[in-house]
Image (cartoon, rainbow, N blue to C red; front, side):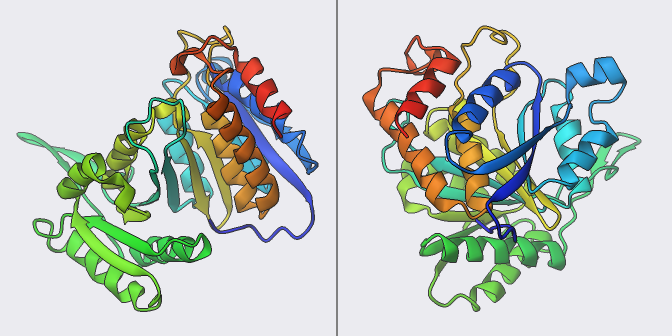
Length: 336
């Protein structure tokens, strides 16, 4: 992952717990970060459903300013307003890359062992652009925008990620056999960029074939790069391979900032009961540490999580255990 330009060991972190279990998993994660001997200055912001009810907007300008002024942002969860909040933050902060690691851990109901790949998803165009849908006389029309600038940027990012993380292969996913102009351009740019990285192997698959390969041979993938919609769908499929959304972190990276969040929602049915699994939030924090260049601390945190999962004694209910959110956090702190 690309690192920030921060040179010292002190960081301002925007913390947005959000709704529901977001507050609990954030508290658990911060408690572990505080044990890592890094000087974090946490600045808290509000966003989400509760914020919308109290302030008439799910994302106040003050919160956007906090994110903009920080070295990175940790986001917990949001309810019905989640899409509005995250999309607006992405747009405001020019976060062009969405990163979704797919990694199998022990005692997590993972379907396969030894799965470890990254999905790099373009975040700013494709079918997910505001005001690009319109109604027609007999239905509706959505416009799919693919530009050379955005696709070169995300493909370059994927190759650089592979290089920086000792990955030897990048896979492009598209539907160029049908979408000849848009995905045809994506595929063309992929192989143009690949020429700058001769030490990295390349391949490309149609998105439907990739959906099959993910459930038949997921260990073959290292880095996948794709457009917005395809990346959105394949990311959730990948999460299903390794235990579900409750164990899946994510990052949104851009020129002006970075946001790290678990993929799960606010889970109002268990909110406030200390039943939430904090590991996805913690893995998101580990992605933040790597972004900041704090790889030693990231490795230490990750190893502690792995130790707790391997032991299988302190697990939340979704993993077959009976431990609380804070108990899991304490076990991880004890394993640092």
